[in-house]
Image (tube, rainbow over all chains, first blue to last red; front, side, top):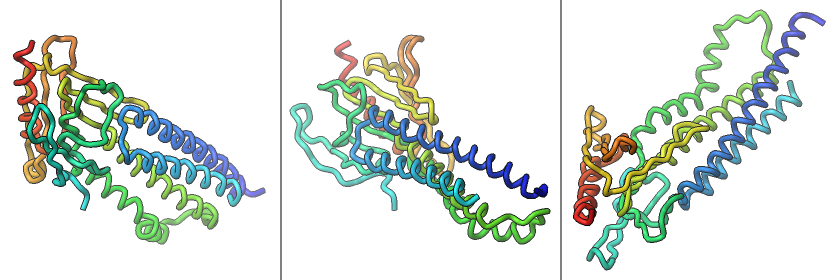
Amino acid sequence: MDIASLIFIFLKFLILFGLGLYIVFAAVILRQEQLMANVLEESFEPVLRLAAFIHLAAAIAVFVLALLIL
Amino acid sequence: MPTVFDGRREKLSTPKQAKVERTIMTPLTSFAVSPDGIKFETQESEETVVLFLRQHLVVMLGPALLVALLAFAPVILFPFFYRYLTLPVSIPPSYIIVGTAFWYVVTFGFALMSFLRWFFNIYIVTDKRIVDIDFIHLLYKEFSEARLDRIQDISYKSSGIFSVFFDYGDAYVQTAGGDLPNIEFLAVPQPAKVVETISELLENVKPNV
């Protein structure tokens, strides 16, 4: 196994770790949005919740993509 | 164009006032008089929202430009850098695909966070008190309020070309007693009207104290 392969394996784990952390961040945004929606009730709130949910789903999708193709 | 101040109003009649101007809320409303469909966490049943404020939309200009820059970076800037960047190993296409996808997710996340911070950073004036709800960042929110009968002084400041051009500024509400926080309405639209509205409310409250 050459040095370039070792670097890419290390890089893959580093990227997966970073993407995992980002999923946690995206989940915190979704939770925070839910908490703030209790503070202020407004008709636009479901759209924001959907956007926060899409963000979390996209973060998970990138993690799965990295797991499969890297 | 986004709505900064929504001019659509309905004239309603209430027992106290002959005509009350009501602003119809949109997601981008930053100044609303007697808004419909707004309710906040600690609102009492007989409490009426008189003014609903967010920061002027012009404060979102910086984040919006940054989001636009981040969105176009992978297609414009990256090929330019990649051409002149010399690496000891070539980057496999799979890394470029994951990197680009992650870049757009982060850009979306940044845009969402910026909007949430603006959307939930609100100032509410009711017929009983002034409420300041700050969504500072992801894990920190601050809720402060001042009863109208505890308000001592109100003032506003509007300085700079942007402030004058877009008519926004900071309104300061000073409360009586050292234990109560002073409330600051930062970068709100029409600060003069905000101060005027609070003054009118105070005139109705003060004689009863």
